[in-house]
Length: 303
Length: 164
Image (cartoon, rainbow over all chains, first blue to last red; front, top):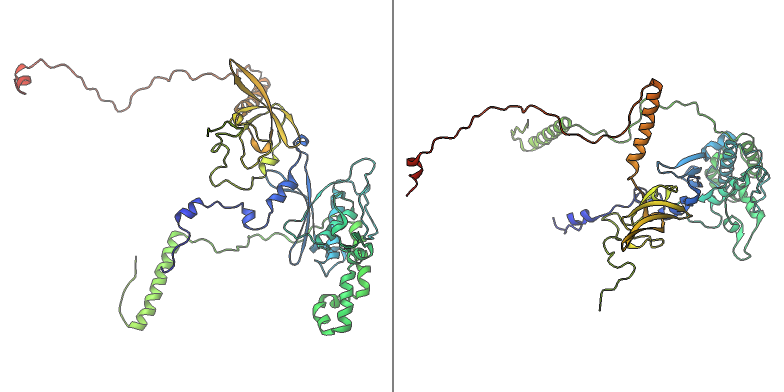
């Protein structure tokens, strides 16, 4: 060895691993403690989190409560379900986040039989809307859990938040981070926010590309063109999706059966016998290659 | 200068976190619920500075008498002079663990209720009292061979062989 070993036995003996989800970089425990901590004098009353996560191609929205056995999901909605409601493309934009939040809210309220009482904001105007308490039950309260996102103004996670608020959930929030809030005037421009909710920003970009750079337009908006979606028809499309979501938010069961054999994603561990056989094979292969070079007659067939 | 007897004096080791268990506190501490009358152990978590009990109560067990937003009221026995006082302290939940001292009793209660109900269904009268272990039963020793030992008559000549 030419480099001094930095991490010796003593290092490993004293090394304390962080929690698994911290090592994976997926959970912010400081935030999690504060979100799930319930007042002790409320005993086992669940404290629900409105959890929103974005992957590269999907949006996940869940209502989750924590327990020692593991978090319990009350209801969940994914952006990949939106094709059932008529939205096929642009599944991770601000408007799709709004739809996913709306879908989750209606689903939860339907599950708890509160959907008649709490309609929420049927016509999305982009203004700040908070649920009013109804007659019989208090509105469903959840706390927004963004995970590890940077909460900048106009982030899609607040699109999902707006969707849920308009769907009828009670989530403490401020309008400071909605798209269309201007730092200078310290006010939310409802028009701009409404544009984002109905995909106006995407439509604008489509129009720009179509007029200025047709090739880029063809390559970038392939799926839109394939389905014949025009920039002017985008708002209508989203209006229809919202209506479809409100009409029937229940999840659709898929027809697929789970595969009988569970697919393996890592190689299977060999037994001791198998490893010995592999070793013999490799030694033979090595020696036959060396034998061809040296023309030696070495027999290293180990038992 | 003298050592001093402050609130947290002599707690260097008892209040320190365990080896390789420092840092973030596991969520289960916060998710446990406590009801009045349950037994809890007081064990100080040195990482949480609020709601710490005095070092005397570290390692004590008491009953819960109050539940507030973030803390538990625990009633602990303390000997003061020639009597024992029931002291009531408030402790944040991070410094408290559910005690297992009453676990065996609770399980036995449940089991006995079940046995009594079954016996009632059968029409028998059973005693669910615990009996202390009696003397062990007699047993035969395995692999024993008898060796009879008798004294041999005293032999003067042989004994004096050593030297006289």
